[in-house]
Image (cartoon, rainbow, N blue to C red; front, side, top):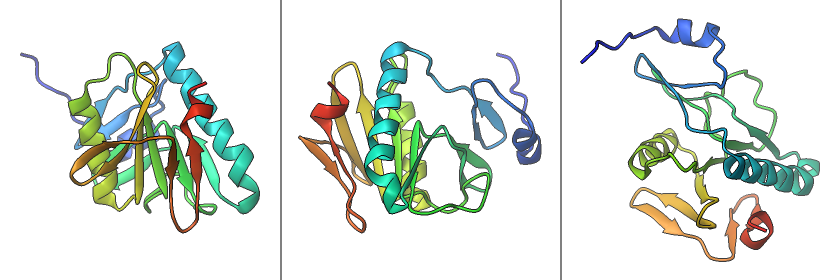
Length: 166
């Protein structure tokens, strides 16, 4: 077993990774992505949110660094904020964090990411599986399968599942 190389938060933030990586308690962690189904769904979600909500000042972006804890940074596939954040790395909870599963993702790893978002105070965390065409709302108790539409309150943002999975 080889020893892990730990780096500081400062080193992580000043280093460019292609694709960008999560940072978990001193360790740079690669994310699974790059497959067609994942990329296509991520793009559909971004376009869906931007075309319907940007005029209301709601901003959707892809792969934005979010500092969920002092020594933990996550990069959701899609992130929604209600106004310009005024910072390069988000330190305040986004309104929505969305994870799109890749074929190599293990649910146990995804649930750790989801718990980080919820612990940070993100009010809505959604998980999409392009292979099964299922989506889930994350709660402290676990994942609840969504039916038909995912919806937020204050403000109302809706994603019709038949449209993004078409």
